[in-house]
Image (cartoon, rainbow, N blue to C red):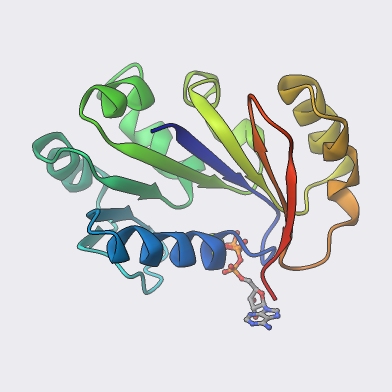
Length: 165
Ligand SMILES: Nc1ncnc2c1ncn2[C@@H]1O[C@H](COP(=O)(O)OP(=O)(O)OP(=O)(O)O)[C@@H](O)[C@H]1O
Ligand SMILES: [Mg+2]
């Protein structure tokens, strides 16, 4: 299963969306592992704010849904220990969700290993960059999205609009 990038400015709905997704994985018996420096309440089998401890736990696990909230901060810590978190997770059978406010907050190696993106409201500049990176014209509408509005984009296949609220 592919990795997912969840992007959008503050309060746009990223963590809310990710928690709903986490709940669905658990309902299907898939373990959910969460790294969240902000200590939000998650439906998770394991949750920590400690990146080093999280790394140890994910290395010992297999086939889990991994969520890294505030990935801008977390992935830069994780990158101290390894060049490419995303490809390591794929070898372990994990599918990861990297959550950040801006695309530039996530390391390019991680971004390029994501084959799905859930895009909430972002600035015009970020939408322009993402439009080029994902070759998707619908991304141009993202700066006008209201709270909860998003676009689910896969590398192959048509984008789908959604609304959380
Ligand atoms: N009907 C609704 N139900 C629940 N929340 C709603 C509703 N309408 C608006 N909201 C707001 O949507 C916001 C979504 O917040 P969320 O934590 O998911 O954002 P975020 O993108 O993760 O932000 P950050 O980058 O700051 O972590 C909340 O502040 C919540 O108050
Ligand atoms: Mg959040």
